[in-house]
Length: 138
Picture 1 (cartoon, rainbow, N blue to C red):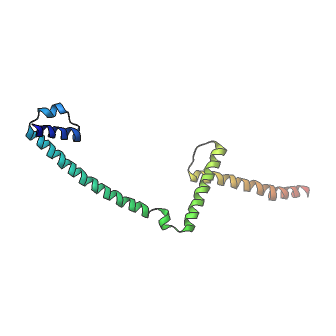
Picture 2 (picture 1 turned 180 degrees about the horizontal axis):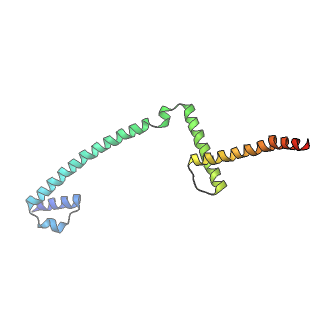
Picture 3 (picture 1 turned 90 degrees about the horizontal axis):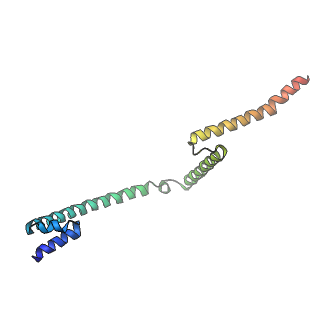
């Protein structure tokens, strides 16, 4: 009888099964449940070890793909400078327009239009206006 109680206690502890249902089972059925649980646990442990090995391989590959491992210090500093300049452009875009983040191509296009417009206005004011003024005077 104690053997049956040990089996029931083992199943309750490891599987959380209902003790009232387990008490209705015979000793042979309880032994089958315990062996099935142990086999499942062994399979789970084997699969878990395989997953851990795959995770280690993935971590090694991720480590190899870090920019520090394949870029020179000059390339790393260039990337950092590019990231900072993008951050400043996004900040300026947000402050000037009040709109949230925009793709870099759109921001670059908008600032390009602003710079081009400024150059055109400056050219008109510095070159074209004096020529028109001189032509009117003559």
